[in-house]
Image (cartoon, rainbow, N blue to C red; front, side, top):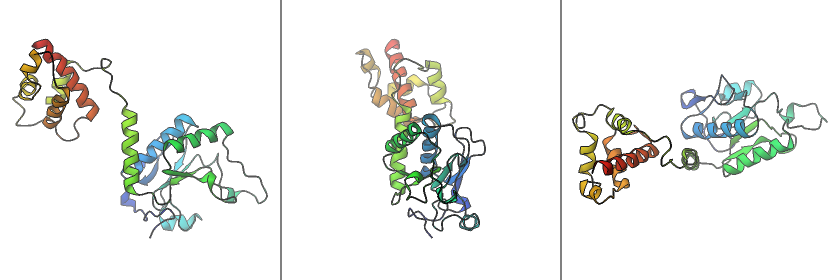
Length: 251
């Protein structure tokens, strides 16, 4: 079965718990890149709108029926969260004839929309639901969003979050480079020191003698020497820059 945004029901085995902001208990959402996307959303709300204190996410179809949720609620697919529900009520639960109040100030509503704009339409806000069913606590993946869309978004915001790597600040020492590169068990590499690796790449002693080291090739060599996932691309590039400078000093 699928929920209103087109995602299939999530099983307990396909959800994961995320903990963001001041919510000590966290909430369960669909695992993988969907979870990463919601972590981003909640972090943005926490930093730019209001402190995130309570988040509710996935619920089984049976539990959703028990609590009176909509039949095709996106909570069932693990693609929706409710944030600080006590502050931001569901319009349907208010006394009839009572003007709906979102619980957000005008400035906060603008901040939420800025967050959603930064997400490029990946998320829908319950405040934009039809009158009578507005739900300011509620955020969900937009109808028609695919896993590929979510994966692309996560890749984009992850790259933005890492930002440019400082050229000088917080640069590792040569000893730290050696530990980072050779601190993993690898029989083929156990007896090879950092400089031996550097000299076997195109960034070799001849290039160093000319005062030029191809940092890109150097980074590729270091990345190949490491187990998959041992260092991020940014970390490898930073190590390569420092190593290149040290090779030039040794030349």
